[in-house]
Length: 409
View (cartoon, rainbow, N blue to C red):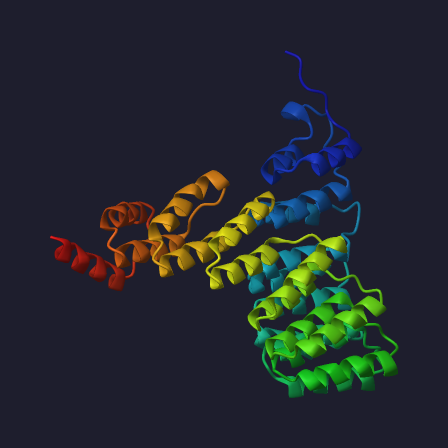
């Protein structure tokens, strides 16, 4: 019986790149030689290890990834790049597996690879993601063994302080960076400004932006501007927020949907509807396409106005983006509050056809709305469906439902 032809190392890499299913990619990686009929072992190229490890890591198939890493460790034809092992550390960090991230860092020398400040930074970032602050401090005790801390190191440490609300420590770390002759970058300032905004220190954040451009000759990026603009909108400083927007235009920083959405939402909240709609037109004219958040903002405003006809129009416009359950829940909740629970039920029933499954919030809002206006037959159907799907209605809602059934009898 004829067997399939063995593939070359180069061909294996090409096939691994093309294969989207990580399980099938792993099967291909494990069996490049059909029926194991080769006279000598297959010589896996380093790139094939890189491709399969990244695919498995992204899919959180960690047991299989570890098997491939063990096989890679046995290879003696090449040293493993530190960047690949940093990827593994990052995968474990994002999966909130700090112990495995730390173990991978410690195992780097066994892959014939040297630990440098790059892998230390990756580990620190993974530990920060897992909120393992004590472990971060342990790593810092021996950091000089691996190289001189760089801007990335300090950015991670500043971010850790900002996340914890300790701006005093964040500034102390920034000053240490300067004392050690490390040049701060845009990320450094963006991280500090983000922390200041989160802690309500908007004036300090605006001043730091000016210091950054004047003293360090650095131009703010879109992340920095977005964080500032959101912070200003949150405290109602729309005048300042629009000045930031104008500065972005002057500095040729492209306005994205996050900027427009924040401003449009803020204008709606203070009753400046015409300006919000005008900004929506500007957004489209500039080539920035509305996203699902834009439509959420618009639907929320029309629901607040009880203008359900316009809310439905926006919902229809957003179908190209596949509306999320939040869009529907806003309309269903508003309809129920206005006594239009039957209309809410019709929209609820239409959700699957539109490609959006109701969630527990959808069920609870509709059930409460139907009960409140004595549509008990419809409420019974919704309750049965809730229980079937494993969604538990609040005890308060059940008590009210039973009470209304008794009154009806």
